[in-house]
Image (cartoon, rainbow, N blue to C red; front, side, top):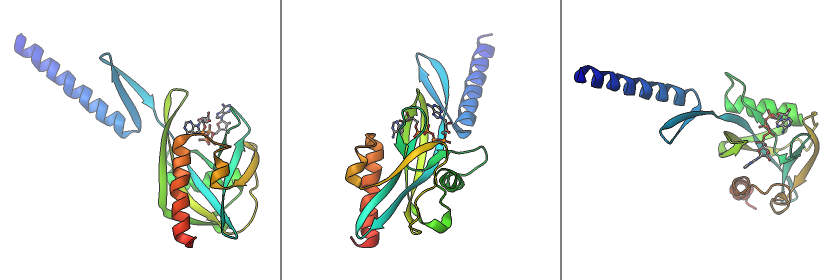
Amino acid sequence: MVGRTSLLIKDMLSARKLIFNLLTQINKTIHKSNNKLTIKMIKRAAGFLIYRLVSSRIEYLLLKASYGELHWTPPKGHVDPGEDDYTTALRETREEAGFTENDLKIYKDLSKTLNYNVKGKPKVVVYWLAELVSGRDPTLSDEHTDFKFVTKEQISTLSTYPDFLEMVDYFDNEIKKIHKL
Ligand SMILES: Nc1ncnc2c1ncn2[C@@H]1O[C@H](COP(=O)(O)OP(=O)(O)OP(=O)(O)OP(=O)(O)OC[C@H]2O[C@@H](n3cnc4c(N)ncnc43)[C@H](O)[C@@H]2O)[C@@H](O)[C@H]1O
């Protein structure tokens, strides 16, 4: 009896481990606290930190959301089921700013991933760096009411999230190397 019980417990533990691994693979996080397992869906989004050069000044594009806290972010949005991050970044940038690949020089090898919580749920956002080469202004959708091209210093008046500002710092240094500024 004792042997059968310990076998059963062993089976349950392996089953739990199997479920844990499977759920992790399908993009969920599992948190263990007070011996209880809770599962949180991870929201995933992708976009581009778009900059333009005006003489040798670097200016970044931010869009003002028409909902919620009316926050400012680069063009980005949720990854649809079956879509890869890069395709999402292109689609959302086209939908939110009207820019296609023809408007941009995309640095596919330069990307940053931000991890933060929205309403208690984890969110992952992948940004690639892209230069606006067409010189066009964005065409906004109804998700945004305004846009601004701002310098790195001015960004902190529109967004105060430390990880976002660190990312801008990182890209700013890369841009200076690319253009030998
Ligand atoms: N409150 C709301 N009311 C009505 N409709 C809504 C809504 N929120 C979303 N929607 C709908 O969802 C759609 C947007 O979807 P998408 O356009 O597909 O996705 P998104 O850009 O990732 O959404 P969002 O702007 O919410 O994301 P962010 O992480 O910047 O921002 C999400 C939150 O995280 C905060 N945040 C942003 N960056 C952060 C960071 N680095 N660290 C911590 N928090 C951050 C923001 O301030 C914001 O509070 C809209 O069309 C709208 O219909």
